[in-house]
Image 1 (cartoon, rainbow, N blue to C red):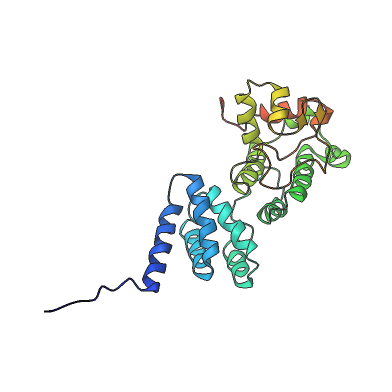
Image 2 (cartoon, one colour):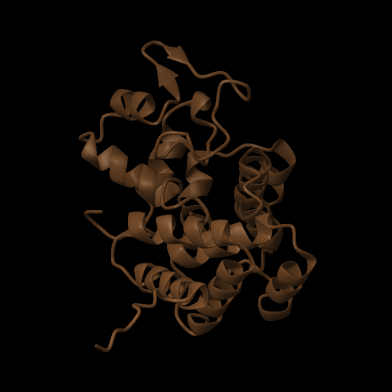
Length: 245
């Protein structure tokens, strides 16, 4: 009587199947599934990190999305010299393009956001807004709402894209606008919703703000809203954002 022995899959085959499953998960439409796959791949170790590098290269001709921003962040966080060299070789200025009608360099902001140094990024973001407004605003370090109205749409969109793509979609002017519209354009509701105010008490800068991704959606970037609502209103009503969104 003949017999046979069932052989289980080899560890190498199992590992390959797991990596392929995670690769497919990165292609899912669900951002939650994509982010979960990224963290699982990092947890696997070198093989997972290599796969993330491959995916980033495969997507380099496409406009960057939140997936790309998150992959860059986790690769940067590995602190591996060869991974940093990979990022520097392929995207020396950063994965996200940074067009500016005013010739402003946003690369330092991108670097801070990649490193998830959100407090320093927020300070630099306000500095860049003041640069956009001109020499007087750059010297005084705050904005008039009339200056915001004159901002080029390209530059505001660049700033917004950087914040969105390196925050899993949580931060950015467009996200704040979505929340504002969802609150019926009610400023008091917005301040509470994004945790800039707790009932009647304004959140104190900087210690009471949340400088990581545990913050509520729309929490960052900040504006000089304590000088009144008009600067924020000008930002959220700017033609840079599609009507009705």
